[in-house]
Amino acid sequence: MTMVSSADPTLKAILYRANYRGSKEADIIIGGFAKEKVCDLADQELRDFAILLTYDDTVIFSWLDGLPFEKIVLSDSLRQKLCDYRETLGKSL
Image (cartoon, rainbow, N blue to C red; front, side, top):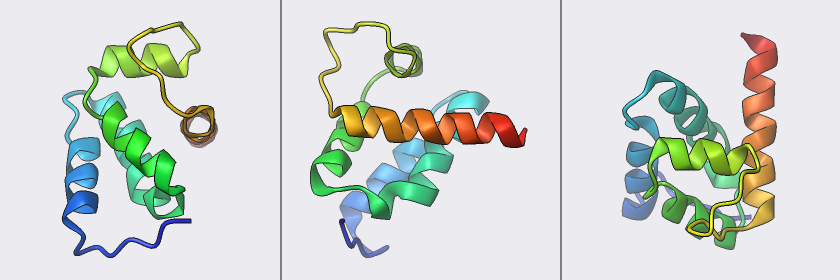
């Protein structure tokens, strides 16, 4: 697991990009995931999450839905964690 300080500039950038996506749905799902789970991600998952945030929301959600996108080649474990988080949100709404 990654132990990240809130003063870490990389973490601050990730949290900012995750929380200001441009759509309310993305802010809730991606931003909420970042706030709650980013410190629990393995090093590779954290790097992958930072890369994921460079993509458009429609591409990210298609990737989460399992649609093939050659552009996104990231860890399956990150995808599963995001999917699990999204599912948990759906149950609580």
